[in-house]
Figure 1 (tube, one colour):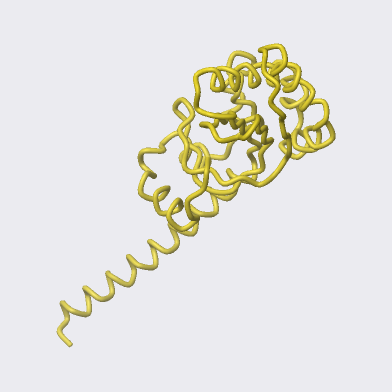
Figure 2 (tube, one colour):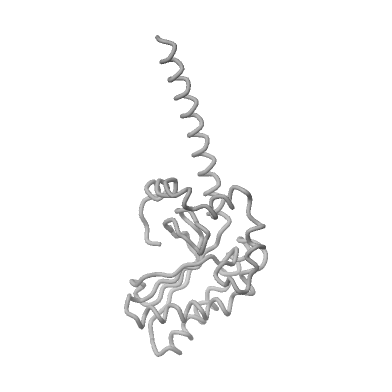
Length: 198
């Protein structure tokens, strides 16, 4: 075997090992982000203007009534509080639906939900399964709305963004602040995870 072929094979092997290591490290950091985030997911009854406006009103009522409870402690504490107060959150949604002149039923749960890669202002969240507080209005067939309850990015005015960013590791910051750089990686994660409603 010629020396140049051996060099090419050696370089190719080293590159392959490096890529596998980088992909593994990237996937591990994405998993950590998914494990550290608790999301809010609201599904509108339909895509009509009225139903979409209602979805936003329900969102605002829930965020106003829960922001103090969900912004403290850890993701686990926020999730536990939500689980323990599903009835309370459902009542908030029902009251707002009624106040807006509708009589849709509402379902509230904490569950695992698949989300595709999402941009939130200048932050990117990788695709995958996240724990989320899910609020389904009526048939839940309309476009949905989502945000991050913990760390609390749903209400930027009530939270110091720098404080949130300081709580993240360097790897997490690199991924969420440089989403464009990881566009191919996120696309691959979307593909491998399967498509879901997000």
